[in-house]
Picture 1 (cartoon, rainbow, N blue to C red):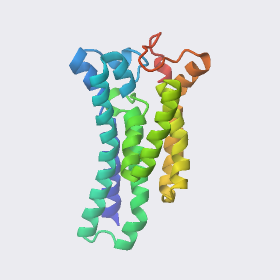
Picture 2: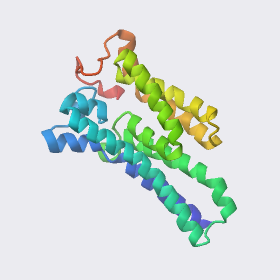
Picture 3: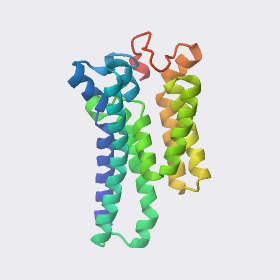
Picture 4: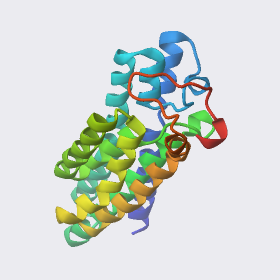
Length: 226
């Protein structure tokens, strides 16, 4: 049991570190020699990279940030495959604990993206990394969430509003598609966290100053709110 707990803790740490990889920051440094946190919204996520560096870098950051979420869950499956092969955990316990570990690792990656240890615990809004986690949990829920995002984006042309709508939809979709209870809890906790990360966007939405897709930020980032 001690071995199992140690391995589990290591996997959760690995998931956090995976999520912490500051893709947008690295891309901005390499491609333009700038600190992305000093431009646009101050976020290191794909949307701010898109506005600051262009479509190519924005798409690249989006893909890699999504893969960070998938990679975090892959670590969990690797742990369970290894544990089963070494008889560290019984198959019955394996089935019980797998969704819980997937949920914890997913949350660790999501938090890592927005609170990167490499950037003094700053980062992005965790949308793309959350999508990666959802893809690994349930591709059906992930696609439905993307559908909600896409519909709101088509109507509003506002990425932050679309992300918030997707975050709200996740837990409901998990429930409607009969996903395990831990995954529903991920939908609740992860969704609320993503919404909280968008609190500065919500203020701009209320004020009517949130930029639409293709527009740049009118003001410099409010670092205390990111």
